[in-house]
Amino acid sequence: MTILLNSLEARDAAFVLHPYTNASQHLQDGPLVISRGEGIYIVDSDGNKYIEGLGGLFCASLGFSEQRLVDAAMRQMQELPFYHSFGGKSHETAIELAERLIRLAPVPMSKVFFANSGSEANDTALKLVWYYHNAIGKPEKKKVISRWRAYHGVTIASASLTGLPNNHRDFDLPIDGVLHTDCPEYYRYGLSGESEEEFATRCAVSLEDLILAEGPDTIGAFFAEPLMASGGCIVPPPTYYDKIQAVLRKYDILLIADEVICGFGRLGTMFGSESFGMRPDMISMAKQLSAAYQPISALMINEKVHAAIVAESEKIGTFGHGFTYSGHPVATAVALETLKIYEERDIVGHVQNVTPLFQRRLRALADHPLVGNARGRGLIGTLELVRNKETKEPFNSANGVAIHAGKRAQAHGVVTRAMGDNYSLCPPLIITEAQINDMFDRSAKALDDTYAWARANNLYS
Image (cartoon, rainbow, N blue to C red; front, side, top):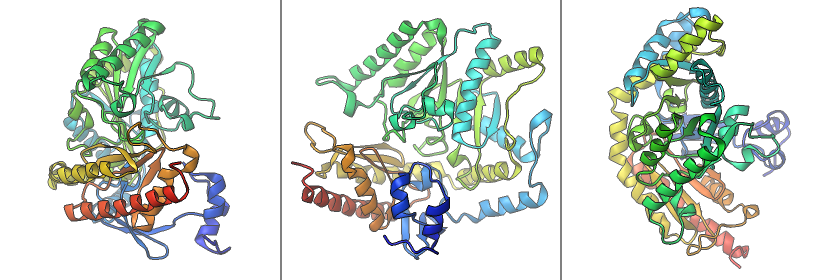
């Protein structure tokens, strides 16, 4: 790729530091500059059109041209473009959005705290774990447990909860008091001859062993995505959450459900917790809350946690936490309109209707010579690429096989994201069956290209 000095690509390389990008390679290759969007498609600065196969970043649930959300933002900008929620201040759209979220909650919840990103919502949840246990007179109960390959964000605290090595390396993370337990991926971590039921039991036993080793009186909370999306679309085996929650109840440990990706229809239920029988004490959410048209996140807390906050506020004189843009009027207006669209158009029902085709096409690619495992639920799925299908041996990460597959997908008109050994798809929820078929047809061509490239470069020798 030749970058002209006065091009958008050159200006980007000169001035923009990109998240989750090889900064060295980017100086050579430059960016893909996106100019506009229409439905599930995006168009780059050269006029090339792509299916957005990852819904932006698991978030553009209503696509890229929903006029109702644009209008909602415009109306709110004209009426009240900003106000804060500090010191007891409020405004109508934040109040109405909180009411609607409490009504939608999969288990009884009491209050909603607004923030701006999933990272901030999970960071807030961790602070509230500490705050809560101070309030109830258990100041030692402060350690929290997450899982390897989990993704909970990139702030210092939420990146510590994240269980991916590159989120920790050279950032001096995780911080003290954040522990990690087994990843519930049966394909990669199940033992020979072990059933899924036995694997789920082993995960629960391992969690309990960790709690006992650390001391039950020191463990405050367990953080879990219903389905682990960024770690490779890891669907826990049946009974996993039943067994995990039994351990948490035994030792009086809070459960925080990270619904940042699973929330608002992605798995064919309004919240992913419903799909797996989770009964959390707190629920974090973002991304599809506003269909990504405005940055907003939220943390729902149950009455047990809220009562502790009230008690500490009486003692301290304030609840000393918040963000300037918590419950921003424009963001809450857009999120409120998004939830109305989900209800009026029965987006959850639509996901249920198109999921069988999506999952059938996904699993059909398990027969491809590059693919070791095809897994997913609802409108999200991953193809795990392996060097040897029988032994599950992965490619050397330095070969960049999944990255190459992502580049070939882009050449065939599908933008997705290659993460580790995984080729993942998570399209806008409005995708049609015809568009699903088109997306998988193009993805199959990308896999064919990648297989031919791998063989030509002797990656199987």
